[in-house]
Image (tube, rainbow, N blue to C red; front, side):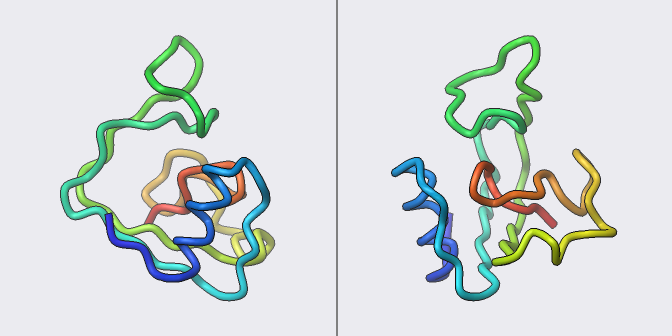
Length: 94
């Protein structure tokens, strides 16, 4: 995974279980994809019957400092976004 400065702040906040302090748009990419993550619980370590576990191939992620900037394109599980609030998620996937 490759993270710019904003995404590094997001990742640190996720690990520390705090709100990220984003000051701009963040970009990250995973050329090899991931091993899976929950769409409902960012701290889940594996799939359950209700945590919407997904494995994603190569992808980019875009974080916005204000979730309101995603209004109008928000839709769970579409190629546009996985999650509206970056503070509690893997990020916004494009």
